[in-house]
Length: 609
Ligand SMILES: Cc1cc2nc3c(=O)[nH]c(=O)nc-3n(C[C@H](O)[C@H](O)[C@H](O)COP(=O)(O)OP(=O)(O)OC[C@H]3O[C@@H](n4cnc5c(N)ncnc54)[C@H](O)[C@@H]3O)c2cc1C
Ligand SMILES: *[C@@H]1O[C@H](CO)[C@@H](O)[C@H](O)[C@H]1NC(C)=O
Ligand SMILES: *[C@@H]1O[C@H](CO)[C@@H](O)[C@H](O)[C@H]1NC(C)=O
Ligand SMILES: *[C@@H]1O[C@H](CO)[C@@H](O)[C@H](O)[C@H]1NC(C)=O
Ligand SMILES: *[C@@H]1O[C@H](CO)[C@@H](O)[C@H](O)[C@H]1NC(C)=O
Ligand SMILES: *[C@@H]1O[C@H](CO)[C@@H](O)[C@H](O)[C@H]1NC(C)=O
Ligand SMILES: *[C@@H]1O[C@H](CO)[C@@H](O)[C@H](O)[C@H]1NC(C)=O
Ligand SMILES: *[C@@H]1O[C@H](CO)[C@@H](O)[C@H](O)[C@H]1NC(C)=O
Image (cartoon, rainbow, N blue to C red):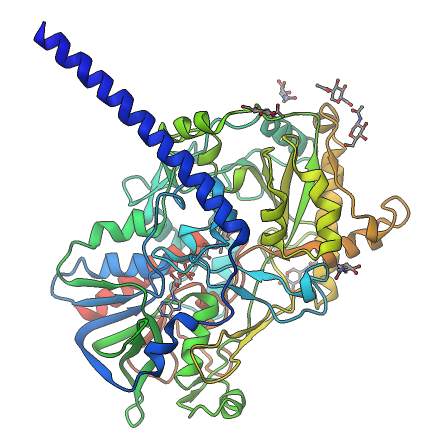
């Protein structure tokens, strides 16, 4: 009897606590999404002004290695380097800790309007972003432990073998496809139905297929097969084809690099992590041209810390070039204009590469099941359901539009499941001006529409990052310069034409799939190419994949770091993040960044031993 009673109470307690948890998540979701609708992104790093302007500099002591930025790369580095107990490491991050909300990958748009995003926009653009307020696209950048990996779409994509062979062909020893594959596998704990020999098991980073997928996923695969693509593991033997999305989640929860990597290392006594601290300068001994440490500020105080062995900059493709330039490393004339004493003249901030992306609305007569919030949360807590789907993605395809044997695929398509898209948050994530927003918003609130992406993977145009002033309180100027080159518009147009063909397949005709039109671009039937070019230039935005701004290569006139990721001409200073990609990736950039950091950590460890 007492035993039974005990079991009864236990059951009752766990039922009560389960419903309390459900209630907590329901409230969290409604609170955070309501906040995001009103949140105003900052225009400067104002929160750090008092610290920056304070006169006293406090001594923060000395570490072997100081890492700037706890994003994707910084978390991998700190975790791997701290495996050597005798190396002391300081990891400095401008943002704060993650929370329960950002673990729900499907809610990623809301994180873009929170303190987890730096708040950048491009400079007004001439060739793209024309339907956005003031022709400015939003540039989302993670400002939180985990960086981009804590707020991104969680799609796990490695790119194409040719991407890395092309890095090696520039003179980067050790970076060919065959040589980097082990580093992709090293991070990974794969749960996917993948090709044998291509996936890692037992790594820190869990990769799974989200589930369940909508009925439209099968239509997408069948339609793609009709266009002669093969079904593939796009992270396996062959990338080109159509596949089921692989995402970085673990039992449905986001696997940011804070969760997957850094949490393993934070208890180690040789690693210290400082959050809510902005690094404002790398200190460099001007005679020996060696990095000696960094200066950083909190809300109210200023600090200096010394690095015995080296400083590693992992601040991401926008902030890394900003910090290098603030420290005197960059293009001579620009630094003279900014009144910053030159340390070395390097093409920092040039070669800004993006994936111009068109976010388009597809509608069909398939309607997603109407699941209550309560049920969604309960499913989430059990590791499945709509809240676990990164960016709602289900299917991905990669293909060439022209025969090109020297590059990876030209186009990536991401098929997402129907979901009730909040028109206000959608407008905010795209920065659509009112004319465009009005056009789309009426159509969005429906269980029948999907926001798909068409990405141009190898743009020929290049943008650049420059400083606005010599103050770290000011944001950098980000000029993406997308679609400047004619070829980029032509190839992206071919990608859009493919998509229209895809919607005309038997598989999609079965569900009457159509693309939402953009009436201000005229009549689609009359002059399709002109219509699509207008669509792309007005509604196209970014794929959230900036890279290349501190590119790796042997010649210091063209590149910023060498193939050991050391900054040309400055001792004890490395860059390890997406800035070092010399050429673009045939896919999303998170896994490639983790690979660079895994390999970078091995290079550094072999030198420190
Ligand atoms: C909205 C969005 C969606 C995306 N979707 C995907 C996806 O689905 N799949 C995918 O593979 N990739 C995706 N990406 C891209 C991917 O997340 C990034 O390429 C990757 O996170 C880059 O890693 P990183 O280490 O170079 O930089 P980050 O992860 O950006 O890390 C830089 C870190 O440095 C910190 N920092 C910067 N400056 C300073 C400073 N001065 N002082 C202190 N700290 C500083 C930042 O706060 C940040 O935490 C997405 C990105 C975004 C923003
Ligand atoms: C929005 O952008 C479109 C396309 O460029 C343009 O036609 C329209 O005038 C703009 N509307 C506003 C309010 O800026
Ligand atoms: C997809 O194709 C397969 C094989 O031809 C078929 O069995 C299946 O019913 C198709 N699915 C849909 C949703 O049309
Ligand atoms: C979905 O269900 C909710 C209640 O759970 C209801 O208010 C709403 O009208 C339903 N929506 C549709 C499209 O059926
Ligand atoms: C690519 O080459 C093949 C064979 O060489 C040819 O059949 C095909 O039409 C070409 N495709 C394109 C897009 O040029
Ligand atoms: C193929 O890619 C190379 C390398 O970027 C480029 O120079 C060339 O123009 C491309 N060829 C075609 C046919 O698109
Ligand atoms: C969806 O559209 C197709 C083709 O137009 C039609 O045959 C089918 O009956 C429709 N299905 C539903 C559920 O409306
Ligand atoms: C197909 O969809 C379009 C637009 O969404 C709609 O106008 C049309 O009536 C639909 N056709 C059928 C047969 O359902």
